[in-house]
Length: 197
Image (tube, rainbow, N blue to C red):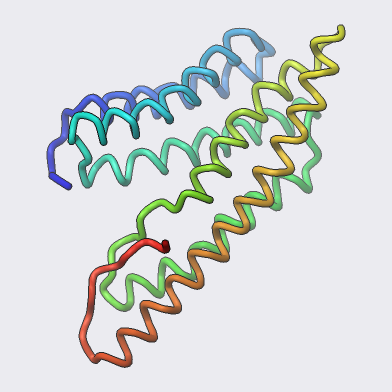
């Protein structure tokens, strides 16, 4: 872990962040193909920045903040667009937003005990990827034709799995926070946060 600012993974994360408002505008003005292109880029760059960080040994503190922030912003922007366009129901958006609201609780407990944010868990990353795959497919599903029907079915499968895994990751983070707090109380001294096995 280093404090470098300009690394290839960070450049990709910055590019994803810049694309969020552009993507939302394209969705709202019904420029679906351009919006879809940006969303596909977001999904691919999300995978690529992690790969590059490990391969080039460019994991940075900034990157650990930028990457999940970009993921969450794309999820929120996409949810807003999909709800406004009537592609997904409001209740699904509320379930995903409720998860983020809930996660503020364990994160605040961590801060009270002087821990940094926990490493991104594999389940959480998988949930994010499922949702980032689901949203472009759901956009394709609003059109007509066989490809749209297939995209809608597969998109909803990814959306359901992604939502379930998103909440399961929240449960795993909560368990991890509880373990850290109990270990802290038992030892009387603060220790570094370790990811779940």
